[in-house]
Every structure is written in C-alpha cells, then in structure tokens.
Length: 407
Image (cartoon, rainbow, N blue to C red; front, side, top):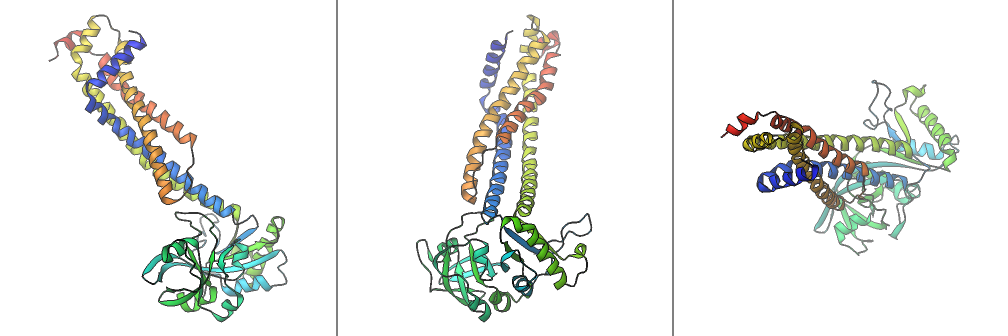
C-alpha cells in the first residue's frame, strides 16, 4: 500500500466517526492553545515592563532597603525598612556626592481614592520634587509637587491620566478639584502626560503627593520604599553608585560594605531581575498547561486502542490479503498523526486568538514567539507518533485467523 492510499484510508476512517474524532482532537487543541497563549502573555508582560523601565533613562539608580542575595544567608532585599527621607536629603546635599544630579525618596502604597461618587484603587506615591526630573515626567496640565509642598506637608495631589479617567471621566481637566485619600481631602494641582503601559505596571494609574504628607498624615510611616537617583550621565553611573553606597554605609553606621542593609540597582539590574521573575512565572504556567497535552495524548491513545478493537476483522482481512505489518502500523500511525496534527493547527489558531484577546484586555504588547509555535507544532507531531505507536503496533501483531473470527 502506497502512502497516498494509506492517507486516503486514514481520512475515511476518521471521518466515519466525526464525534469521536472531534473529541480526540479537543484535548490537543486545548493544550496547544494554553501553552501558546501563556507564553505569549508572559513575553508580552516582560516586554512591557522592560520598555517602561528603559523609558526612564539609562542613568537611573534605585536604592532599595535590604541586602542583596548573597549565597543562602541574606535574601531579604526590599523586605525591610532601612531607608529614610533623611537618607535622601543627605545624598542630595552631601559634598561627597559629585556624580549625582537629582534625588527623590518614595513611599508607595495602594489604596482607594474617592472623587465625588467615583472611586478607584490606585497607587499612591509620596515623592520629592526631583521625582519628575528623575522619572522624566511631563505635565499635561497644572504643576508638579514643589519644595514648598514638601516642607509644609501640603495636601496637594498630581494625577496620572488613567486615574483622571477613572475618577473624572476622559477628556476632563481635574486641576482645582478635590479628591479623598484615606478620608483626607487633597486638592488636585496637576495631571501628568501619559507614559503608557498597562496591566501590573501602569505608570498612568498613579497619584503623586508630597512625601512628607504621605509619611506624616496619610500612612504614618517614617521609612521610605525606595530612593531614586539620577546620575549626571551614563558614564558616571558606577561612580555615583559607589559614592551613594559609601555615604549610606556611614549614615547607617556600617563599617563594611558586606554589612550593607540596602541595595543599589541600575536599570539593567532591575530589568534582569524582572525578566527572571516573569520568565520563571511563564515557564511554570506553561508547564501546567502542558499537562493537558499529556492528557490529550493519552486520550488519543485510548481512542486508537478502541479503534483497533472495532476494526479487528478489517485488520484480519487486510492481513489475509497480503498486507504486511508495516502497512498496518503505518495505517494507524498516520491516523494518530492526523488527529494530533489537526489538533495542533487548531490549537495554534485558537491560542493566537486567545493571546490577542488577553494582551488587549491586560494592556501589554503582543509578541510573536516563533519558538512557541515551533514547539507547539513539534509537540503535537511527537504526541501523535508516541501515543499512536502502541495501538498501531498492537494492530499489526493481530493474528489474521483470530482477527477474522472476532465478533
């Protein structure tokens, strides 16, 4: 039997049982679609975060509380409260610091903001005036936080465009309006221009207030979450990092750098850390989704075994007429590969549509991953061969006489 005849016979056998064929394919479709959608979503989120971090400039340093991971001893970076507003002021004013252009400490909390009858849960960020310069913020209307606001603990707020839309509606200018944060009234003095982004890292969904107001009146905290530092240029990044590091060691009464209770990270460090986290998360989700591929493969093997039993007399007749073992193996193996191939193709189409819907819903860019599509195609073909071989081998070993007697 030549290949064309084998292929034709396989299609006829599968079409004869449409419902069974569709159910067999479904497991592969769901598995392939899940893997593609999750990989695409993970890579899109990773790209969105990287693009937004890179948009802040190449001369940005971020000081975080806690030590960097060193072996298995200290791995609590960002989990302690060792940085203060006084640290930021010392960095900005110290004559030892010559490579730094601007400094801003930040206190960040998520909480509810109310304006009239509208409300939203957003990120409240207490900042210093230099924050706008460091983070390259432009004003769409009004003004940013001033030094006077900081010194006087003024109750003023600057809103991101997404927050404006959530609280006041699109196309409105809320400057002069009032909002409430933790039941405290704030007057809106400015709106920032859109920085883009979405999902878990939306730079437009934010409310900026003076750092001192956030610490003393809103959240009751003496520490800060981070200190953002802009070096004078990219070439002075290492010098700025060393100067700030040694000053903080002195301020915190720490004699050795190994005892540091803070970490200084560049943009490349942050992007690398975020990439590692998102990659691990994507791999974990994809691994879970891949389990459905295994289940789909087992389902196809079960269906093919049932098919072998149903077609026992046919197999016996073909062997009696001179069909060889390889012809029988080829027959059932081709049927299995057709099932998984069709499932793989439909899964790729469905996975692409789901990923497009998800990235639009979450607000991250859609990225085409050739590797994920290649992986999906390869896996579906392998499943067809691996899980189809045993039923095909079993069919080929049937005795012609016993097969013809089978009822």
